[in-house]
Image (tube, rainbow, N blue to C red; front, side, top):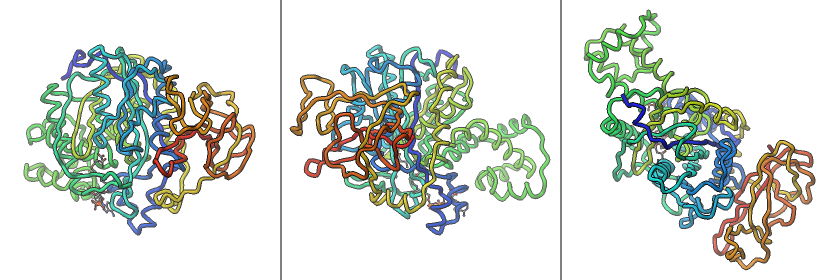
Amino acid sequence: MVSDDFFLNVGIDAIGFYAPKNRLSLDDLAKKRGIAPEKYRQGLLAEEFAVPEYGEDIISMAIMAAKNAITRGNINSKEIEAIFVGSESLPYAVKSVASILSAFLDVHENAFTGDTLHACAGATLGLLNAVGLINSGIIKKALVIGTDISKYPLGSPGEPTQGAGAAAMIISKDPRIARIGSKFGKVSGHVDDFFRTLYSENAEVFGQYSTMAYLNYVLKAYDDFKYQAGPFLADYYVFHAPFGKMPVKSFQRIMFERWFDNPVKLKAMLDKSKERAFTQKERDLILSGKEELHPSTIKTLQEWKFTDEEICGLNYFYKDWLALKLMPCLDVPMRFGNCYSASLWAQLFHLMETRVKENDTIYFTSYGSGATAISGMFKMEPGFKKLVAEGPTVLDYIRKKSRIPVEQYEMYKRDLLPAFLHTGHVLAAPENKYSLDIMECDYGCILPVQSELQHCPSGHPGVHKRSFPMLGIVAKIDEVDVEIKDHVCGDCVYLLGDVKAGNNVELSIRRLKVDENSGLIHWYPTYVLA
Ligand code: HMG
């Protein structure tokens, strides 16, 4: 068993999550595509996924997740000495997301910024960078973010596994939430399971092969972690989740191929489990492979001369462990879909916010196609609960949703969502605690914090520091349904959607304009209905 001194005095000090509020029900999608809804619900263990709104991209989501982490942890953003961002939905081929985020998060200019990339494992590599820099005393605090929108073609097998979300964490010494283990499991190789070319919106995937690669690497990372750390049994298990069924399969493989991989161990475990009588109906269901145990596992057990009663007992033992150690975090893939680099971390946060207790251990495995798998362990700190109790929690975002019709999702996929954009004035709401301060030119181009560089490279005049409250009330609408031409200046702001004077609104940084000639992208502070 891993002992307390296995854990470093470095780890997670604050957490924040964000996901778009629009959700597509997979029952609706299945109906439209002529597919049995059970294939998605039971076959993939997926119920709905998050669909971004107009102009909502990985920058919009990352800012919200980071702001949530900073405010929930009461962090002084000037103390953040590094931002590492994992993403596979990058806006530019060259220009880091981390540098863009620094303009919105009030981070000190003497900080490292960079994107750490390896498909869905990007944020995990950012975490490793942060842990290494902090543990060696080079920096004290880092912000690590995973932010992604997963995209597959309309009607493709990957379509029901899309999703969106961002997860941000502050990593520091003397962490208040969880300490990270000093050893990691790791495995990497050249695997053509999944990729996206530079000019394509959607990922290409060899679907069945990708699931084999995932399961193989997750198990190999487990073996390497056990080799590095010694035998262990964690209180909870979290895996990257392209959809809910994959972590379930991983857990099943670890249980039956590593823990109970021979009849002697299995029989000993059975002796400890509670006796339970099974009806003929239950027995038939389990033995036909329609319950938790896979038909191949049942076949092996029969070859090992397990009786039907014993197989049914094992099925229920496995079901209990699954419910206890893995299932609580699967709300995340089931509700938001595949958030790629944010998937693992959002699940971990959800677990920390809802289930785990002080001193509990959590084993995690990150998987990034191409491929790599990294596994490790966290131990919860005494007193962590008060840091995760106050929202917005992952559960708050699960609840804060609006179901959209398939037609709206298809318009989003075809880039045909209408911009219902207005100009107007917003006052800070009485409950507002935080604002975003941004340097910009007269045309709204964002300028750096360094005063020597505060002139717009596009040649626009003006240098302004503007402060945008996170929560506001619409004081007045000036113009309805405007074109995005030039940026709005002075006290005027953009508002999006069916917003009227008196409405409560929240700030969202939206990608509203791309320069036709240069391809330069403009993100503008925009208010949307709260
Ligand atoms: P598919 O090929 O259409 O589905 O798409 P299938 O035929 O394999 O069926 C899926 C499951 O539904 C099966 O269950 C069926 O039996 C069951 P299983 O045997 O696997 O347990 N099923 C039903 N169940 C109940 N009632 C029914 C019914 N019909 C079938 N009527 C596939 C599946 C994964 C290929 C597809 O969704 C896909 O291409 N997804 C995208 C790729 C992906 O997510 N791969 C996963 C591993 S790779 C990874 O995790 C990395 C990634 O996150 C990216 C990164 O790292 O950057 C993707």
